[in-house]
Length: 108
Image 1 (cartoon, one colour):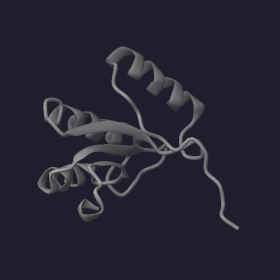
Image 2: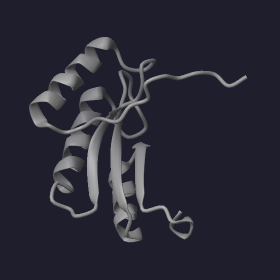
Image 3: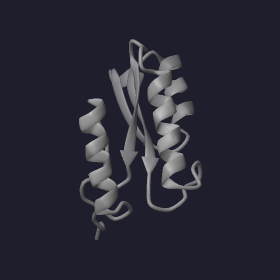
């Protein structure tokens, strides 16, 4: 990526604390988004656990010059409308942003 001129990376999935560390080591600007779903994932047993990981990531990189953390609700097929409403309320209170997949489709 660096050889192609990429200067900023947005990643969303799992073990984002490790992803953020690699972004920092590479010297790129980056946003690491901890995925939140209604079900358990490989790094969080529940949505609440994923949110806890994500908020810790946000705090860890709050004052970093190049790296940011964010919460990343996975998508409309894996998060309920109530979950999204909760996230929208959270962004209004905190002024922080979310990253999510708005639409999913099947390639044919």
